[in-house]
Length: 307
Image (cartoon, rainbow, N blue to C red; front, side):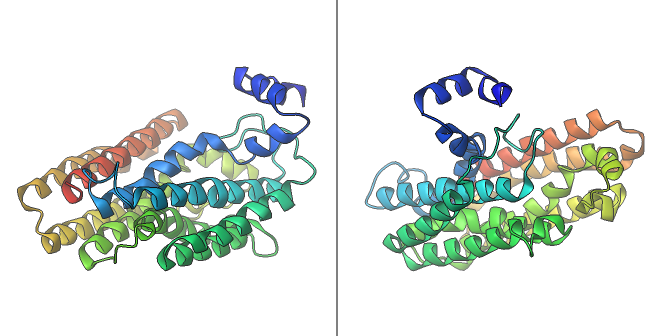
């Protein structure tokens, strides 16, 4: 407990500022992930209103509310309820040295999730539906007897749809703008793109997961098949973006999508060819290169479809 509370200056400051275990509740919402979730959520808003209109207009207020509900209430509540049932003692995603579970973390998590759903009725119907779908997926993902996070393949499907496509769609829906086919394809493309990224995040832990007996997607598929799935999924994602490019008639700037595509292939092809000789550290570096390619993809998509 002492180590968790004094791990760094932020922890020491937080526990001094907030009495008792209040800061532990915040930590189990894993705010370190919020910038990543916020960035991918805002992608949908900027696609809906354009880069020039992103910082002004009557849609800005609903977009900010949608961002808070999606990132803090839905995502934070999901990660907190995940902590309740995982009972991790070691480092977990976006939370090193997690503090002991505070007494009321489960009801706190449910208040966040249900409260976000209630507040979602202040926003257009598309956002309410997206929130409700991800709310249900969150319960199925974390809570026994379902606990689909432990079922390799099902966790993959939940994440590719929930994070990949529904997250940016939620911010689009908050603007009230109807979703046309072209932009729908752009949002849909992030589903197979995340399907490609997901197994890549597990390869550097391949041997450790095998020793622990964990049945991750990468272990079930095997390393070669995981990389093949990642490559095919990425190509499918860019095929959908190319289709959207033609429907939306974006012109010559659409060819800048070749940049992230080349980056993805520069990551995946050598990995697929040489994986058998790579160390866990090399697989981890490959994962970080894939995350960089994702970031470049986001920025390029905005340049092509939001300018």
